[in-house]
Image (cartoon, rainbow over all chains, first blue to last red; front, side, top):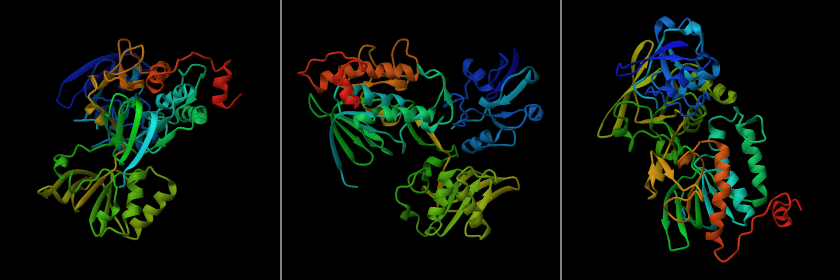
Length: 106
Length: 342
């Protein structure tokens, strides 16, 4: 189990224990964290699981693949630390990872 | 646009896998189908969201790509020769009398049918609206998510936002007729056909269009008429004068007009029985991801099952005086003839 922290736009925090191998998006959906829509169910095809990775974690989490970078074009208010949470696989190294959610997935 | 009239046995709303397979099940029972979909191609989510993703839970197919499944279904239903109406959204369903329904689309197509099958999946694929403050105030005059008549942009100053095929195609299409085009995208890479991207770069280099790397953060204007927008860039905010904004951020699924058809809904899903998959309106069925009932699973295979059972009841509406005999495609010469394999 790995701890992942979600911070909603409102500031509400959710700390969740996630099985390694699951994605950050799956962790949010299975635990009813509001603010992640995941319309396509994790196919990297909709950009509705957009998160901002905490600055301290950007280096550790690895780079997004081309497909994900392309899909981020369909998200809003994309920043340097923007990722699609369906493409972040949870592993021990990510224990304590914090992601912030945008005001709205669209 | 001139009104087009069609009369048929069954109108299927949605050309996703479940809508397509309905053509097969209804066809075996001699019912002719027209299929309407808002996308410009068959396949629904399989085509729009995951054409290249393998699906592992179609019975008998250990792994099949979304696009492959659609191709196979199209082949399977070909003997029944359905009529497709793409890029059309059903707006209204009205009861004409005790036998017929009237179905109207946003393209002025009017259908008269005995049975309506809603296989609408996650709803209609509609353009995403970027959550820019007060954008809705400008939507009737200055903000356009799709383009029906490009002449309205003649001699206008346009801001086109996005980096995909839609955004870039419209830049090229409107470049000649607009007074000025500013293309706005969050990065200097584009996700579009290589040839299109090449042309866009040459338009930028020759200064025929302006390009700003950034994201729209604010719209300004009076009385719903856009005058300028603010673009957030790495070098600070840039003000761009424009009278029209065309954002292209892809598609999202929304229930859309389905909510207005007088059907019983539960959390945006259509309630049906589990014998016939019929709604509270006799003759209107809902199958696949769009319906709900106790124990419902949103799986393609469940939608296929629902299509088969729905067809049994549909037959009773289309051929009220005929007896329905159950037959297998493996052995019935009658069915084999319909499939063209006898």
